[in-house]
Image (cartoon, rainbow, N blue to C red):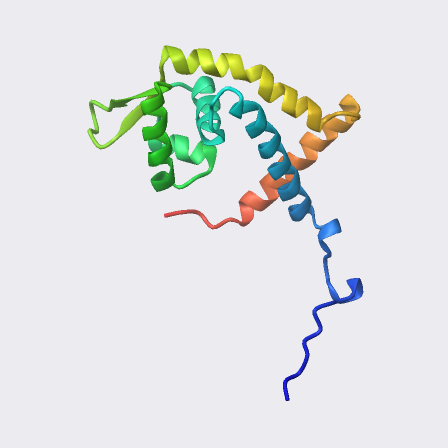
Length: 161
């Protein structure tokens, strides 16, 4: 005779329910921002993964693939496919480092720069939509608190070798 498992737990049995989990709420908000932004980008036939790279390269031209992978927070091996795809689309060029031939600097092409400039207002629109009905003081407080969360958690992450 098998026992029937209780699939329902009461809130008092859960030390931190999802509705009050900072990590869960940030994850859901992040995913919502991504989906809203991807919807805007799709109209311009730009992938979200491309946008993340374009945005960082627009801010800091000539990053190595390793530096770019850290900025967009993906593994280098994952980023290689994105970079090759972006290169094929004409958004970037990879330039071999003259001192260390294993390294490539990733640079925006004129098309990549134009595309990024054209899409920046869309990204701002999505950010503004997420902050709708918040005061400037609330947004400033949110930014401050989120930066503190990031700093707190960064200290808890073991350093990579």
